[in-house]
Each structure stands twice: as C-alpha cells, then as structure tokens.
Image (cartoon, rainbow, N blue to C red; front, top):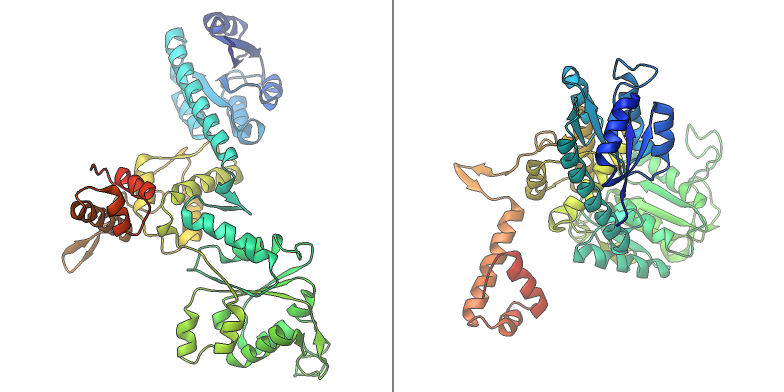
Length: 454
C-alpha cells in the first residue's frame, strides 16, 4: 500500500524525531526545520497534509513565523491542510491559526493517538475534496464562458448561445436584473466569427438622453455648443465587431428610429453630419423589462422590437435554478477567499439552509455581493447565515398570516399535484407521467425528490 505524504514543520529535532517515529508506519514523512524549508516543500504541491509548530526560526518563542506561513498558504499551497501543534499557553494563537485557514490543532505535549485521529480525519477531508474537484473537472457542462449552471434551463441556455453565436442575426437577451445578461452577450460574441474584433458595451440607461445620440453615433465639430471637435461614436468603434446595448428598453423613441435604420441598412450618420457611414456590426441587446408591454404602452417601437428579437435568449432567475445556488455560492466563496488572501472558507449548515430558501430578488449579483460582504466582515473560516444577512428559514408575515417563501410554495405545489396524479391513475407511472405531461424518468426523479412512494 502506498503511504500518504505528510510534512512535519518543527524546529526542535527531538520533537520532530518523536512525531516522525510515531506516524511513519502509516505515512511517508518529511521534516522541515524552518520556514524557508517549509515553503519549498509546500510549494512543491506534494503534501496534502502538514503539521505546523507556530514557533519557528528566527522567532522560535512566538508564533510570528508560523502565522506568516499560514497567511501565505492560499497562494503557496491552496490544497494543503495544516494541523497546528500548539502548547496550552498559546490557545489564542491556535484560534488565530484556525481563522487563517488551519484545519485543526493538536495540543502539546503531543498525544500520538490523538494526532493519528486528527490526521486520519484530515486525510479523509482531502480525499472528499479531491473527489469533488475531479467531479467538477469532468462535468464540463458546469462551466460555460465563466457562467456556472447545472439546471436544465441553464444547460439549454448554453446550447442556445452556441447556436445563436453562429448566425449574424440580432440577439435579444431577457432576464431579471442581476441574472448575468452581459455575460451571455460576451459568450455570444466570443463564440462568433467576430470574436477577434471589438465588442463595445453601451448601457442605454446610464447615459443622459441629451448625450446618448452623440455617444452612439458620434458628432461633427460644431454640431452643438460644446462640440469643439469631431467625435467617433461607439458604433463606429465597434465596426467589424459587436455592439451590446444593455437596458435597451431605456432607449428614447427618437434614437430607436436611428437604431432601426442601422439594423436595416447597416448605416449611421454622425450628429450634425450629412454623410452616410457604412458599418459591419452584430447587434446584441438586453433588457429586464417586458418589451411587449412597452410596445403596447407606446414606449418602444414595435418594428424595432421585431428587428431585435430575431434570436431570443432568456436567462432564468436564480430562484428557479435549484441546486445552482449552492454551486454558485461555493464558487464565489472560493474565488473571493483567494482575493482576500484567506484560508479555506466554508458555509455552516444554517448558511446552506438560508441560501436554499432565500428568494434571491437580486439574482446572481446579489449572491456574489452577500458573500463578499460576509468575507469582508468576518475573520473565521466558516460563514453562517447571519454573516450573509439571511435567515435559516425565511417566513413572510402579512396581516398576521405566515406565508411560505416562493421556492417552498412551488415545491409544496409540485408535491401535491404529483400525489394527485398518482392517486388518479392508481399509482400507474406511465399514466401519471402522461397526465402531468412529463417523462417516466422525470416522474421517478420527482417522486424521489419529494420522498413519495408508490
């Protein structure tokens, strides 16, 4: 049997010898006597687990060097688990070490049996994390152009993006605020034949109306009071590439006419100029408002809507994406912990419960912001529900009545209708699936999901 590698970081030869003797029959042990040697071994990536005495040269009597080593661990050896060996009089240092990412600690004088239990548990964690990393690596559908998703709606969206990218037709992306419309637009551009050309992003709602035409189409010198020179507009800058018009529903009606002409004829005119400029552009637009309703209210031109809506892409809200919220939350906490130079950070059971039941009105952007805030305001390596500003079970009270969150209400309604279908068909899976307009495998999955037996 191949022994697992273990690094012992200990400056006292007698203690190092005792530890090595005590565990060498189970582990392949390497000893580092100071911080410099320890850094070399850790950077090699060969050691999944290391024990660390915080008192190392040149400060053997204080934890300065050991804590500095721990602080460097996220960049030096992000996958290595550290077990701190600490004396009873350095309990505060042990707690500080855990907050920096140490997995566990073992008191001095070392009880070898206790150390073996801690080592066994730590290597088990290493194995589970490695299995999870391999699973994520194999599941390429988890990640698409920096977008994460495993739910059927996101997998379908990824496929539609690939198909939409091939064509040169305008694309209209719809979705609630915070769902990632700009990321979808970038994915369409990056998978298109224009990927080596510019993609110019314009937020139609962020530019004042009186400046918007000049920003989009440019202007000639003297076309208005402050026009002291010619300015090239965003559309010209994107010639040969892609223009992404975010919040297209905010575009004023007079500019909607000019955009329609640009799409139809491939031409623009600078403000104050009479020259027609031919452009080669791909138009992608996005909105979080209902353009059909805007058309009915006279706020958006119907002909422009039809021109933009050739290839529609709809992003599902986070509350409808099932387990994707946990996938995204773990991804964000891993990435943000690196930015904060923190050790490994995980979620408590209360945080996981809160993440699952929250309705996420701000979608993916809200999830990322809550995790950033939690990491900014905490020092430990476990994030709780309170750190996220969430509650483990969110119940809404209205007029003295308790209402279920939308996710729980949907799940309850789904469970009830499945039960009714099974009763009506006398537990016949095929007939129940037909009644529910779904497949037999899907119905089997739903029965397991809600803990229902036939």
